[in-house]
Image 1 (cartoon, helix red, strand yellow):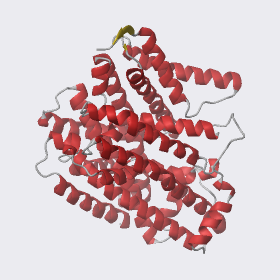
Image 2 (image 1 turned 90 degrees about the horizontal axis):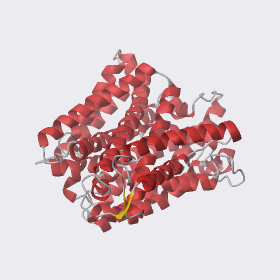
Image 3 (image 1 turned 135 degrees about the vertical axis):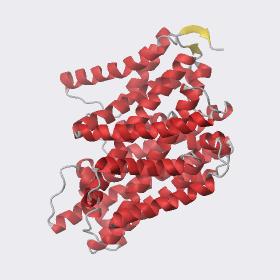
Length: 475
């Protein structure tokens, strides 16, 4: 009941924010927030928007297998955000875009435009549904199952809550609710850290020393070039992950495009780019302390690192206050990623697929329809009920961002025109080629590609567009 009441109270606050921000809302409000968002509000809110509910549970558990080597990728993220701020944002603002895939239409043609939009919609719907599914499973397991509520009802209720506070204000509402999400998420993590340190009998200084002295606090891997945790692989991949999954993702860019000017959007992007390193350091430090606490209490570590934080925080082992904080943190992170995904999908479908950005009735129907489709995806994952299949879906989504990298790189770095009849086939063939290369490499050398698959995928797409493109200059 504590968890249920916490969720309802949190939703009531979100609904209040929605009412304040959605007065006299129009499509311009829903899609672009009327380009009046303060940059510092967007920057702070984007920290929470970039951390999903899965990340909240997964990152602390990473220390059991890879230590703190994830921070190597986070260092690359910083340069990636600078690249987005000074290479991509000027293009988007100069063309006054509502969706970033309109650039592909203006530069390469309708075939590239539709391909980019559909690849985004497929990737975002699948990834967002899997992330939200994992959160619903956690809430169902630790709270709602005891009330007799079926899983399907849990999913419908959670998605309905998101629809209620986003249906009118859209992106304008999300800019402010993301600020609330981020504040709640960071506060809950800090207070849970304090609670775990207290359970270990440590003050803040002793906890910092204990984390630093732990073998799990290793950050850098320079000595093993075959390892997927090698510094240069993680660092360079981190740069391209941000460029593709932020700079070329309508979901992540839509809030940034609500800033008043390009300069403010660049300040927003660079500011929250720097915030990722200390934020993830907090999550990983929490993981180290939780492992120490499990050892002191004689508790076996869970088989999956994803269950490390819920094992303590959701079961009441650290007290009622931590249960409330964990619930707020997980709900804030999951709502922040799911609500923006549904809003950006609605925007892309109305503007890119239907090409009717002024039709408010269409926008309302599409938003409601996508919420229903979102529920169906989550229930489908429940029917599959296989962790290996869900992991495979995540891998599939990572493949689908490669063609977007190739399309935008071709448009920005060359003056050639694309053959729009070939673009969809190239975008489908590039991930399949990457999959075949990965399997052949593992079979012949034992080497397994990591994040660098994204770069290879984009390179194959770029090469295909170059080979099939026309030599005359683009209009």
